[in-house]
Image (cartoon, rainbow, N blue to C red; front, side):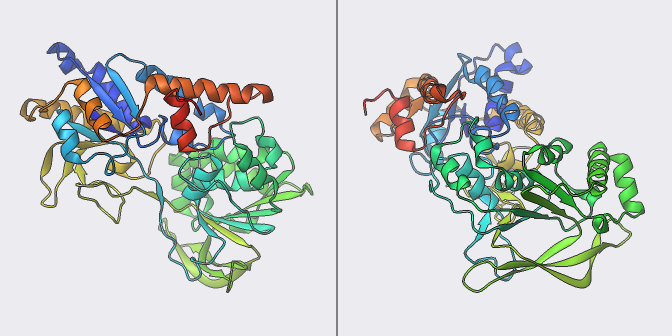
Length: 450
């Protein structure tokens, strides 16, 4: 079995396959290779979770236990579509599961959205998480910044933009990230949500964290707190919405604290234009109102906000994969319960998908387990009809990588890199400091001399 992608989706899939009752009852031996284009495992847990969220990063412990299983082999620095194609994988594996996630920002369809100073959240998150494939420099422009979106990613971006860079020195950020965040002059971060307070997608935990930052005052506006019968129904049926509304209403009644930095939460504001000529000078929004049916409509009243940068956090998209069909609108592999479909909507034998590249970027990490369970169930059900691999021997696949001069990394190599990062962090009292470049990560993981 081959799995492309070593984030939670891919690792959960491998774990479920090793525990499957049907395979166990048939005494079927399971052998799994998990491939990743990066030298390191864990996907968005390593490169998508904000550095000041160590609690969420602790999931790496559970993922580590799975990758440590003898039936599972991790092979990093192996890029599908570059080092390997689908025919290569099908020759060596009885079935292949693609778990490559969503790595691109959805486009912002607004006038001015292409101005310098407009950024995608995925790019910014990859930068502050020190992803080895992004530029190591980032300039945070101006004193006012807008963040468009009402999900957890928008809240993460806003929090990092408002936070004092010194408060991140206890995390695993690299020196370049601290340097560029320390150079920012941001005093006001504005988060814009098109809908009302009952429909915000961020979790209560993420919301509360905004108010726990030294020197940062959260500002909410009572005039944004319109609630109709549809909102009441949403609040009564959804504990997240109920808690969010209560927290926001309490904040709205507080007196100003006069702190040096402010994080403004604007609801019922629809962005309509990014202002500026050679760069961002503002964001224009339209005031919205509830329509009584669970939606919103424009009022024709427009507000200009003084910002010098705009960050969009309006959703992620997956990237196309070589030799496979792709739904460009949704950014996913077309599939039926994890079975990848061809252009005629017929299942492609032996090819499956799971995670965000299967269903889109919805749900938290925990939701990925149920998603993987569906895919594994269908794969196991299909197994009697799958054509066996021509060269299933584990060493045959390594020979292929060697023949193509792919400098792959292994599970043992990752543990070597992990120990090296811990050593880098030790003098500073930190759990780790990430190695910044792919070249250095590969060198350390492969035990090669500098």
